Length: 148
Image 1 (cartoon, rainbow, N blue to C red):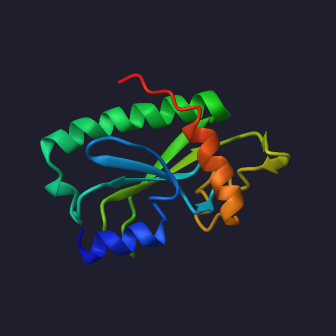
Image 2 (tube, rainbow, N blue to C red):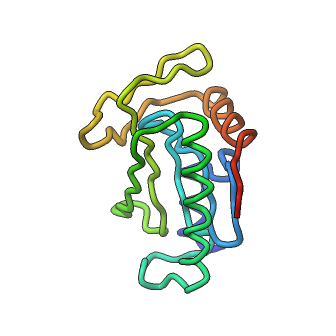
């Protein structure tokens, strides 16, 4: 694993916050929850240009998106999902996956609101402690809908 991919994995804690992976893609919980269920969808090999994806990676991306959308729809009944590929700081191919809600969600005794709905999501998100992040990660992981 090269330096770029290692730094990316550390920054987003992709191993500990991993929800699901395929041969080419990894879905992990986003350490800062822009909205409940926000994630990172990242390519598992070092790559910094979208144009350099291989055909099999493009095909597998569709499979991963189906798992993400089906799972988050079942668990949170989102209204829309934003897939943001910004890569301004973190060069590794990845998307910020932000489910959007026009209503609040109650989970683990807390109320989660999409305060910027229907505008641009607040990517800074809510800083959560490791216990909260693991609760959300495990909740999603334990309720995956995989129909590939």
